[in-house]
Length: 177
Image 1 (cartoon, rainbow, N blue to C red):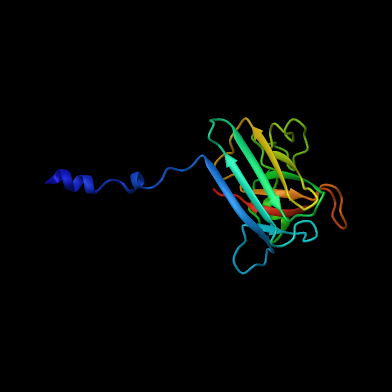
Image 2: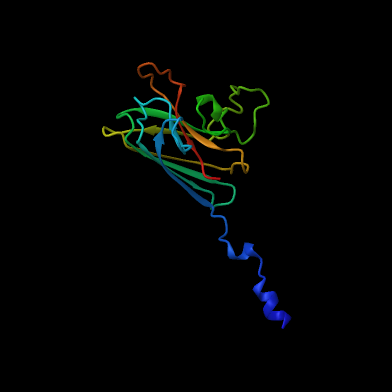
């Protein structure tokens, strides 16, 4: 009788699905003050209106490689947004998302040394929207973020627009962990 009983006690971990190497975050931009904590926050409604949409696909299925694809709709038309992976979580204060995530962390912060602040050591995209405010950007890096250290994807203003300087954080997307 012990064998059937032991079989019934399979570890629950065996019954749970394995963590997927591909994660998808599908969300709409909301104000930071929304009743339910938003997955995506807009800090600049003129560039990223509330209700505009984002889809982030992070593919880590190839060992030592990360491919990130960002697709948006409803953003400011004909605009260019620099987008970076950040270390902090999205919050009411745009600075809550922290600095850019770096595969090899610059010991001097904020990081401006080109040996660290470059497109091989940081995950960077340039998102260009079309006439209707939609667009897709994709990038790949030859590393995978350390678990729990890459928490958000931040859209910067890019081309100065109205009251926004190029480096201003205009939106933040909390990434699936």
